[in-house]
Structure formats: structure tokens, C-alpha cells
Image (cartoon, rainbow, N blue to C red; front, side):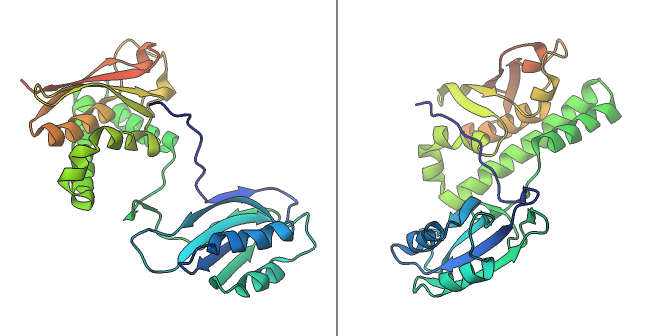
Length: 268
């Protein structure tokens, strides 16, 4: 089933010149209604919540948290007064906040960023694409850069799959494998879709729309460009099929195609 896709903004910065902004971090006791009670205080006092996240892992008995940027421009309530009202709630165990300087906020409360509980780094798509492009510039247009990028991808794909297997267990990974492929989408690499998969013949076809490696070079050449991503897929599917994999990019936006498409086959 295909779903509508919406951008997911990471709580990192906010810039609204002339606005009175603040970043709030609320620790919430694990009890029904904790988040709602805090949200009611914001609504009743006309505090506009701009961006944020709520985290209360189902397997944890520790306090959950609600972290958000808020706009106080249209309310008479100050951030310290808002914090005092929140602290008075039985469902709130702690409140921290800091105010903006001329409408500019940076997250000062969170480190490290995590994905599925694993410490991670937030890198813009353009930054990673430029890093890979720089490898090509240094090593030239020949096969050396292509092989190096593919080998980097293979290592990344193997590591990612092994990490999932250690976290979820091999049974869940196999059972949910087609859904796990959507991690490419969730992580911002592109919109991934399995078109074909055969576990007996160890064959698959993957479509990746808006591929971060190729999108900046859309229609710029006459050959496939995504060597890092094809390597990553080879590493990923090599672990799934338990054999060495050859991944070929048979369609590519850099060649003028609408999307990138990869064929997975056992290495001959």
C-alpha cells in the first residue's frame, strides 16, 4: 500500500525575526493524559506550539519527554510563567526552557540524536551528496571512484542490516523485511519500493525515487551515477540472501530517467 508522504522537520533550529520564541523541555510521568494535560495549558494561554517531538518508549518505565519550540508573541504569558504552570501539574516532573534572541532558536537540550535508540548524526542530503561528488572529483571519472563508492556502500549496507538483526532479532527482520526497506524513505535517502523479490532465486528489483545521490545531477549525463547507493543495496541484500550480490542501476535520474531502479542478482 502506498501512503501519502509528508516532510519530517527535525527539531534543530527556528528563525522568526521579531517573534518571541522559547524552547521547552518537559519531563512527563508515565501516566495516561500526561501530554494532554500539558497541551491544555498551552491552549488555554494561547501559546503557539511550532515544532517538536514526544518520546515515551513503550518498553521504558522512565519519564517520557515533550520537547518543542513555542511562540509567545500573541500571549500575555511569559515563558517563566508558562513553565510555572506546567510544573504545577501532577503529571509533570521537570520543566526546562530557554528563550530566543531576536527570534532565533537552536536546540540546546538534546544530544545525541538517536534513530531507533541508536546514536546518529544529522547530515543534510546536499552535504552527503557533495562528499560523494568530491570523491569522484579527486579520483577522476574512471573505475576507481566507482569501485570505492560501491565498496563504501556495501560496508554501510552490511552494517545497517546487522544492526537491525541485533536489535530486532533475525526472525522479525525476515518477517518484516519488505517493510524495513522503507527505512531508506524514513532516513531521507529516497522513496524506496520493492518491485520484485524472490528469495529462492535471490533476485530483487528496487525503485528509488528522489535518490539523494543522483537527484542533484538529474539529466546531466548518459550513465548510471548511484554507485554508493547500489553498493549499500548490495550489502543489505547480500545479508538477506546470504550470498555476494551484484547490484546494477538499470535506470537513473542522472541519465534522464524518472527514477532510479536497481536490479539485485547473485554475483557470478
